[in-house]
Image (cartoon, rainbow, N blue to C red; front, side, top):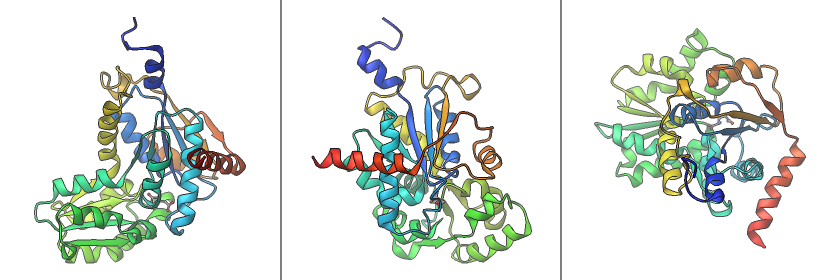
Length: 301
Ligand code: DGL
């Protein structure tokens, strides 16, 4: 018997990779959190770089893209799907949880839970793409957690995504955007702010400097990694060696699937992931459409 124990089938299930998808490269911040927390799990990342951004698109389009993204990962044999994209979590998580044959985790619930734990005065802000904010998923989660509508301030910050991708952190352009978008949150004295977008963890310093040290910034990625450990354990899918090692001794491998290779892929990817990216495969949109269709059909036969 190996140290993993159990039947061959069970061992294979535990050893399968975790699939993570995002509209583009922003989800690499979530992948980074997952790898830090689960350094021995293999991770397969899919970034829909051909069709990013999702944050400006309508719900049916995002849901259809998300179904294809997740379907592609299920086809690769993943044991769990993590929806790293806030916009896709907002519009498609329920649908994916109902239709996919593996557990699915999104970023919104972990972010809401963390904010509810962190708030001292009960005044919480959330920032994200237009889609995420208009879906009201964060707001509904906070209301369900006992906050009142008057104590929740949700704001769309669409310019943050391109500014982060252009590496404008700490620069005048970014300071202006931060001030323009976040002044109402400061005026409302929010004590906790949910960074409800994959790109915003890279803005922690700019946002923190503007909001001041009293405002707790909640990074959904870190909370998601905790939720992933819990869910994998519950479903008996956690590798037995998963939590024994630290990041420096990690054995988990990462592989990357993208629907397009953006010009600045290497720069942006490294900034988001904190290391260079190897082992990248380009997946055509035809294959993705087929993946979405396949899982839809499987569930309606
Ligand atoms: N990944 C998206 C999110 O977290 C941001 C980029 C986009 O608009 O697609 O909502």
